[in-house]
Length: 223
Image 1 (tube, helix red, strand yellow):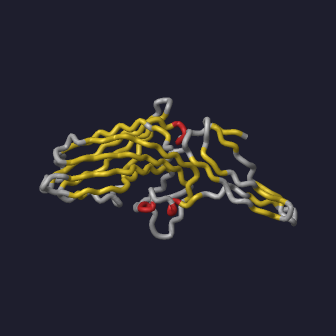
Image 2 (spheres, rainbow, N blue to C red):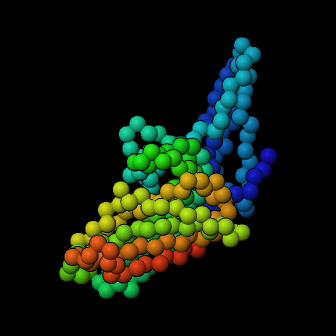
Image 3 (cartoon, rainbow, N blue to C red):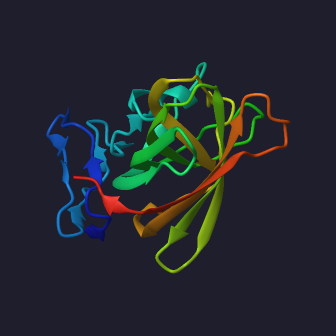
């Protein structure tokens, strides 16, 4: 059976398992030309019973892009993923250089936020920020919107409880900013991501925004 997926996505199936004369093959590789071959998922045991051998899923804890959002005894598994190169840079706010060069989107089997709300989709953006000024700034992520090939828009929220929004004066910082989606099972159809960030100067009133970033990320499969 062949299934079309986004070029550049890495798919990994379970390792070789032996049950008497029965076995399951491992399928690993980078999708090329939009095609990947999948294997069946069950074998017959010696006593005649059948075991389900679904492809082994990678733990979200083991993905460096998302390790910050997994806490406690949670162990969500990645069921699908796509990674993209981006080329977004913005120096429009005085003395602040902001860059996003990588986007990774995953679908997981289960995960909850601090309020107990369950969601299925996660977005990690790798950023670099340099505050070249002589005063502290704060940058706060707002909404993220994923846009599909057919124009459908799926909105997500920032993981604000994990995000450190204070950027000290004359300092460089890099890391990941994360967004969550109730459902995101159309990863292969995503063509664009749009997001906003609010910038604040030290001493600003709570509701005052000194600068707003409108980020538009057309997606290119990562090499």
